[in-house]
Length: 265
Image (cartoon, rainbow, N blue to C red; front, side, top):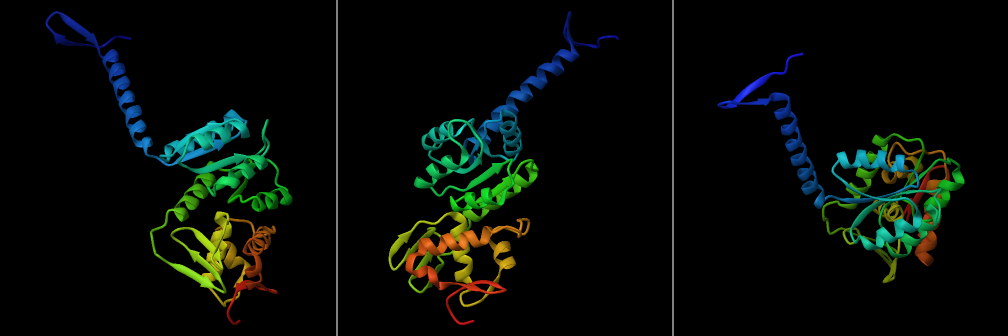
């Protein structure tokens, strides 16, 4: 095979393949620098899993989408990173990990923050999902999963959390919800809700007096792809009633239909 040469200056030749290789290096450096600039202000996501292969898989998919991904191999490391980095927008959390498992990590984060949390697990038992939702998990995904589905869930959560300002206030029977500020009060006293509990309360208040079907509530809060077969909705309603205290009884169970809040049937 002949090496193609090209004249550059009198009495001087250069190998074209070397030129192309050097050019590709320059382009690669430019792309890396461009990606660094692009991700400086990107949304930060904390990926927590003791399997390096899983972390890399998720990180690669999210990086392509423009997210900045921070990694942790166990719960203790995740807590350190979470409180060191002030602007993490979402946490992806595996359940089974050394040192501190996903449940304890979730409980620790929830004491101080309502950041969206997606729980990953190889166990598909209903009781695990229900425990996750009781702890304030926003989404629950069972391994193995499609990275595209994970990305879609992440984008949906972040999209809901960054909606445009409406100045909308929802009120009923002493319950007051400021949607923009993401604040809930009952008789003037603040109530701390998870993201899903907040969305559930807003949905019921927006349809005040109407009996909403279980499917309509699931579609409105969790999306159409979420399974209707488990007790996710019932757990969230029970927890929401408890957190609302005396006002919790305003969330009524409509037998054979679903739930409603206040007003006439």
